[in-house]
Amino acid sequence: MEEMFNLYFFADEYDVPKLLNDTISVLYEHTALPTRMDIISAYEKLRSSSLLRKFFGGDSWIEDPPDLPAQFILDVMMGFARQIVDCKEKDSQLDPKCSYHEHANVEEKKNCPDYKKTSPDFRK
Image (cartoon, rainbow, N blue to C red; front, side):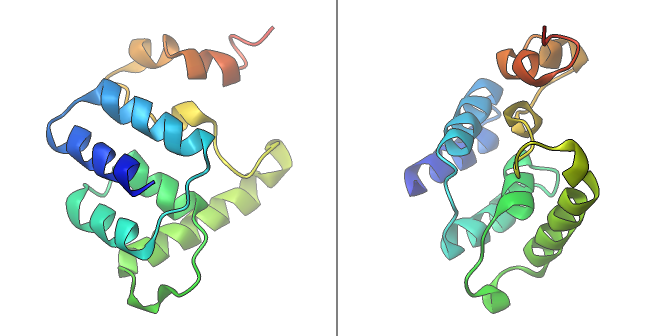
């Protein structure tokens, strides 16, 4: 999965939103767990609002965290706290796939096929 993380970094650097969303969708569907180096690269290369960092921080499993970025550890803790608060409303551990996509505006988000699958406004 290292190639997928590198593809995400490329898409972020060159501002290719469709590639960002497609890449995060693949990572989400395969529940790819990041390696230590993937995490370090993400925290060095991506802005703090990056949705891949949210994905790592909110949904990662870590074996040996002491040498990981402090912000990553905080993100993981905050992700777990959100899951505890929201657990009564969630069917799974992960947020809906669309919540990890980069959408330019509300209209674009509403047109996202993954949003339509999870939004109560579109589910019938």
